[in-house]
Image (cartoon, rainbow, N blue to C red):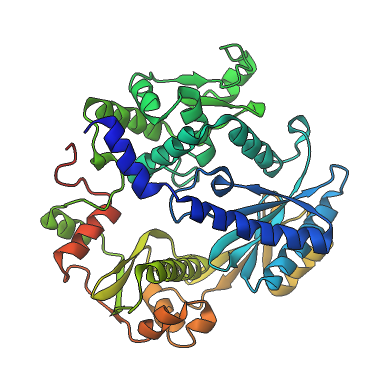
Length: 452
């Protein structure tokens, strides 16, 4: 397929409309105005939604509270948590405290995933932790990416996501959103990037701001020696943005770009118009034993209402399963004459769980709170942990308990909650071809006519 026509088709299916981006910006302004009015603190809107590089229906609100550089670490932690908690309460959102380099709050407000993170509003050369660097990343992207490059960034994310290469977690060992933005900007677009990547060798150095004049120092060569792709952070010359990328995924990326350069097609992207072999899908489902499918009645509403509500339902169920530490590999929903929700996950868990607590260097308040909540506290490296017995060790049993009553009170939208009360678990193999075709996409199978 000719690239121009293919690009237009991908953008139509994956790039958010201006209305979606404006709704995200408006929700940020509401939250930011509250924080500034009530606490006198400035905030920064970070993440791909703020930069116009998020995929359709996938925009989150990453809100950074900017503290003065002279603020004490403990004051930043305590004040940051206080602001986060009161903000979620003000907007009626569910939240929890998570621990990174600083404790922070994360949860959901009006259907949006929200993180409220305290950081130091400092110059790039004076950053104290990785979170302090994030606002500078946003600033660089906004100043350097053109509108077309923002769209091409979303195309690259789609390309990587279809091949399980998108994401910078240790599990994925792939490409972060910021890395995608840098690569597209450096090469001037997705198509130009792919054509160049196909010729990459076993190591590649990219220095967008030419901070090292084309050659790393001996010290940095040693520091980055196990990292095949070296992309120097435009705001931190000592950092490799691609440090988490594994050699295998680096190699897969080169191979996929070579294949795409040879014969571009929709098969390299997530797309609605795919036809999969039913036999292959059924064989794949038989191979994947930990697969749960819930089915319930159709929701009599227009798509503009059904799909946002189903997305919120999926976020809620995924969050609840993950809170109980069930690892989810794939999940999704399918709306037709019957509504379906599915999960591919590790269904069984050990009876005991390990609870992660604060670092021992955190304030006495955090240490006391953790030790009063859990017995048998122990230390791993510099952090507190405790072991406690799980209430649920089977994902199916947990879902049965969670869905047994008061679904609206648990954050499930009313239209969905009404139908979901009468759900049943089904065999995913016993369904129609359209459902199986949908699964083919979710299971990342090669579809018929990939290179058309």
